[in-house]
Length: 384
Image (cartoon, rainbow, N blue to C red; front, side):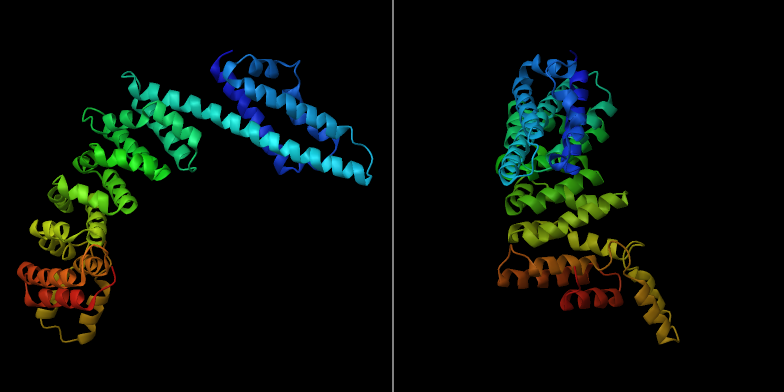
C-alpha cells in the first residue's frame, strides 16, 4: 500500500478520534460508535492496511484494544451503581488508549515529514516552492512545543547540518534561505540546550548577517533575544558589528528597521567592549542621519521652521507634535536608554558611555538646534 493512502487513512482515524472526544462520545449510545467502528474492525481494509505496515504494528494493536474496550462498554446495559463504576473505569481506559493512538499517529506523521524534509532539501531537482513548503511545515511542527521523540528524529536525520549548509549556500534562492533561517530559529527555541550550541559553533550567525535581508536580520534579533550574552559576544568576536551597523544605511527600509532593533537589543545586553565597538563604527552618526530622515523626527525641517522665524509659537509646537512618528524617531535616545537600563555594563561604564554618546551627538549634529534637541532627549531618557 502506498504511503499517501496510509497517510489519508491515519488522518481519517485522527479526525474520528477528535470527533469522539469533542462530542462526549464515551457517554453516548451505541450508535455513536459508528464513525470509528469501521476503522476498528479487523475484517475491514483500513485495519488490514495498518496491520500490514511494519512501523504501524503497535498502532494496530492499540486499535484492537480500543475495539475491545468499546464493545465492553456497549455491553453495560443497566444503570446500577456497579455498572456505573465499571462504565467509568472502562471510559478511563478508553481515554488512555485514545491518547496512545494519537501519539502513535503523530509519531508516524513526524517520521514521514522529517524524511520528506531531508529528501526535498537534498535533492537538487526540487523546486523552490517544494522546499519552502516542507520548511514551513517543519517550522510549524517545531513551534508546537518540545517533543523528545521528534527531537530524536531531527538529530538522527542530521537536519540542522542540512539547514546550515543551505543557509550558507549563496546559490540557493533567497526565499529558501530565509525559510531555512526561520527553521533554525524555531529549532533554537524548540530546545535551546541542544540547538543553541550548534548555532553558536557554526556559521549560522555569519550567514544571517551576510544575507542582510529583513527576514534574516529579524531572525538574528530573535536569536539575540533568546541566547542573550553568549550570542552577542559571538557577534563581536567574529567581527560582525561593522556589517550590522552598515545595514542601518540599507536602501531597504525594512532592513534598516530590523538592524536598528538588533543594535538596540545588543545595547541592552552587550558588555563595554561591544558597545565601544558599535560607537567606533560611527553608530551615533548613522542614528542621527536616520533620526533626521523622513522616517525619523525630521529634525532638519523642525530646525528650519524654528530658524525661519515663525511668528507663532503654536506652529512650532504643532511641528514638534507631528515629528517623531517614524520608525527612527528618537532612535539616538532609544539606543542610549537601552545602554542605561541594560544588563551588560556597570554603573560607571554606563555613565562613561552616556558622556561619549553626548559627545558624538554634538559632533554629528548639523545645527545647534538639532544638537540641543537630541542631547535633551538623551539626558532626560526618552522611552525606548
